[in-house]
Structure formats: structure tokens, C-alpha cells
Image 1 (cartoon, one colour):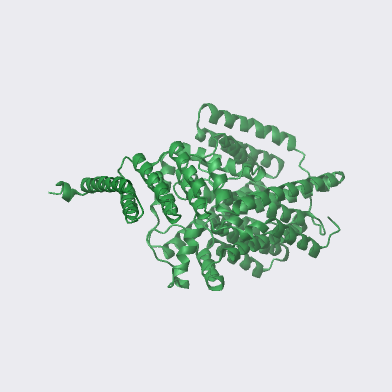
Image 2: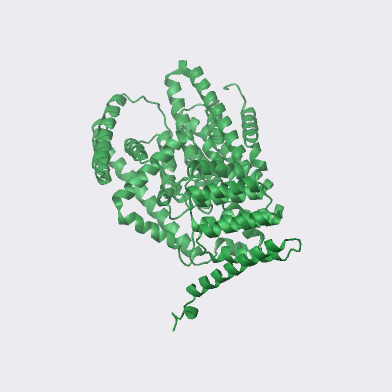
Length: 595
């Protein structure tokens, strides 16, 4: 790979991405969010640039004007056709892979002081083919992550070139690009927190080997075991944080022993000031932008903050578990799941391990460490989602689309340093990278095929999350859209038994009955109405009204026997009486309760 020219590497990267994501270009419009978003913009004739960027609406939730703007462009150019929109996502992901390629080239020059290495190609290939990317690329609504990624990665590229040239123009371009990323997704504000530290990175002159690695590993495991036991036996995550803080103080003490105390303290104070200032600025900017865009926030945000403050011990546990889950997903992405409501509590311990690794790295000035920590920073804004009150799913694979780029860059640079010290292992590492990329390509291609159809996607999602009735009904809707009415009926009866829900039964029955009627299967539709009414204990006005309407249609048909007509008339009278009684119970004026 070292002998491949840069243009040839880029060409191979383009071919690999287009080949693996080829099924995506022929995918359905996803029934979750995508269909509603496209329908909304198709019916909006008065949507303007000002309304997109400054909606001034009450109860504002997400502020992502770049996404709305992209929908408007799609409407003007190709009337929001799904094939072109999916192709856009694939091309945008390819652009991000090329940005990773360019960033790694600059980082190799800074970190390894070398050119002509194959590390940039390996980093771009691993990023583009990583299975965790499939959700963001296949889901049209997931373009938020891709667009944010484009501007953040462009900002990082400008920063790395700024470090070498000290051009103020490049620094300004990096800041502007980072700010634009915030208009694609709010998580980019976390990148702004880490931007100053990356900008202040100095070109490394000597690659030194840490001779105290073994001592650091022993110290790490000693503190980790203490935190592990505190969480396991006392369920006290405040104690975990206390042990972690003491671990950091111990590391700082060791740092002061190895270096001049004044220099160490100065470095710690400098980085702390930069981090606090950047965090304050990012939060202030976030609040100002929302105030300009919306007149108020949605109640879900306040509800989540209330939940976070109600039990801080639980909040710490939840956040640590989420961090552990996402880090595990990066290294071991399978099984892939579109809807993740809860995770194994054991991920708390993975989160503790990651937290202590951060303590070990936070004062480091190496580029690999800065990139790794920047990826973790991008996770922070999504941690409150774990409460399940803001987004429709508590955890999502798409949340680590951009963090994965930073982690892959850090791993490749670290691998480059290791190869500098162990050149005899070069062929082994090259073989390992090829195996990883080929395995990732196969899994990603398979996942893209799953995403190609709403039926296959929802079948896979329901199989992994069978207890959510909403998902079952979306699966039924997908089957009906594909004309698989009998399979939809089968899923209805399975769901009614396995996940009983009055509202869920009602929605599914109405959908399937309408499809049966359109196929002239009136008696099967009537049987379904009767079954659904029994499950609802004849309390659903929607089902009663739909059943009455359907019976009247059947009575209007001439070629039915008198016996059937008499039976249908009896059902009509029965349902009409029940419906009238249900309405009287709900009306205070009719029942006399309003007097």
C-alpha cells in the first residue's frame, strides 16, 4: 500500500464506498421520521430562508436549520425523490471519508514527521466502511450527523494546517466551519470546547517512548478495582467519582515529580482555564442561538433536566453506562439495532474504565490524545438522551458517527508510532488492517441491504426489540405498503397476544382493515373489527365508528343473502347503541354531570 500514489488511493476509496453503499441508493423512504419530514416539506409552499433559520416558534426542540435548508434544496432540484436523497447521503459520507484521509495526512506530518505513509488510506477506509455508519447514511434524517461531520472535519483540517503555517486565515476558517456545524446538529457545540486545545497544539519534534508504562498500568488497575467495587457493592457513583478524582490528583503528583513543579502547575492551570472558558463560551452560544430561533423550549428539555437533578447518583450511573456502551459499539458494533431503549447495567463498569483512561490522558499534549478526547467530547451532548425523554430512542448508533472519525484517527496515529518503534511488525499490522476492512465491508454491505426495505429493517428491529408495540405497528404498516396483507394480519395477532395494547390494537386493526377493504376482503375486515372491538372491550370510538361504516357498506351490496343481511343489521344496531352509550359517558352535558 505504501507504493500506491495518492490519486490511486483516493480512487480506491471512492470505489470501495460506492460499492459497499450501492444498495442504499435504492432504499425506501424510512417510515420513521423520513416519511413525515418529506411529506411536510412537500406541502409547505411558504417556507422561506428566514423561516428556516429563525422560525420563532414556541416549544422549539431541535435547532438544525441546515437540515431544513437541505430539504428545501432537494425539493427545488428533484422534488424530494428518495433515490437522489439517498445518493446525496452516500456522497456526503464519501466526502467525510476524504476529509479523514486529508486530516490523517496532515496529522502524520505533525505527529510522525513523515510523508508517503499508508496510514491516511487505512484511516479513511476504516471510517467509511465501519458498520456503525450505516444508520446515518441510510436514514435520510440521519444526514444531521453527516452534515455536522463535514463541517467539523473541515474545521479540524484547517486547524492542523494552521498549526504548521500559523495562518490566521486558516484559524478563522476553522472557527467558522465549527460554528456552521452547530447549525447541522447541536452536538457540534461540544467540538467548540475542544477546538482551542487542538489549535494550541505544537508540532511534535521528538517521538519518545514512555518508560513508566508498566507502573502506570499497575496504578490504573489499582484505582479501577477500587471504583469497580464501590459501584458493585455500594452502588455509590459519588464514591466512584471521588476515587477517580483522587486518581487524577495522584497522576498530577507523579507528573510534578517527573517534571519541574512550576511548569506542571502552569500547564494544568492553562489547560483548565482553556477548557472552562471554551465550555462557558459554547454553553452561552447555545443559549443565545436558541433564544434567537425559538420563543421557548420544548417541555422535554426541562423534564430531562428535572430527572437529571432528582437523583444525581443514578444520573452519573446512566451517563457512565452510556459512555461505556458507545465505546463498546465502536470496537464491537454487532448487533446493529435501529431502536435501542435500554442497555446492560454492566456497561457502567466500561464507562468507569473509560473515565479513568481520560484521567490518565487529560494532561497529555500528544495529538493522538487530543483527537481521542475530542471524540469523547462529542459524546457528552447525547448522554441526556439516555433518559428516553428527548428523542424517540434512548440510545442510537448514529450518535458515534463523528466520534468514530476522531477515534480512528487517534488509533491510526498511535499505530504509526508503534510501527516506528517496531518496524518488523509492519506486514502483520497491514494484514490485520486489511482483514478488519474486509470484515467491516461485508457487515456494512449486509446492513445496507437490511436498510433497503422498510419490511426488512422493521423485521430486524422488532426481532431485537420485541416488546415495543409502536415498532410492531410500524412493521405492520411496512408489510401493508408492500402488499403483504396476510403477513400483516399474522403480525397483528402475534402482537395482540405478545404485546397487548388497546391503542396499539386499535391502530393496527384500522390499518389492516382498510387494506382488506381495498382488496375486497370485506368479511375478513369485519372479522378483524370484531376481534379488535372485543380486545378493546367495545370502548374504542374509532373502532366502533369504523365498524359501523364498514357494516353499512356491506349492507349496501345487493348480492348478499337475507340471513347475512339480518346478521349485519343486528351488528349495526348493536354497535350503534354501544357507540351512543360511549359518547354519553364521555359527554358531561348528556350525562347530566355538567348541570
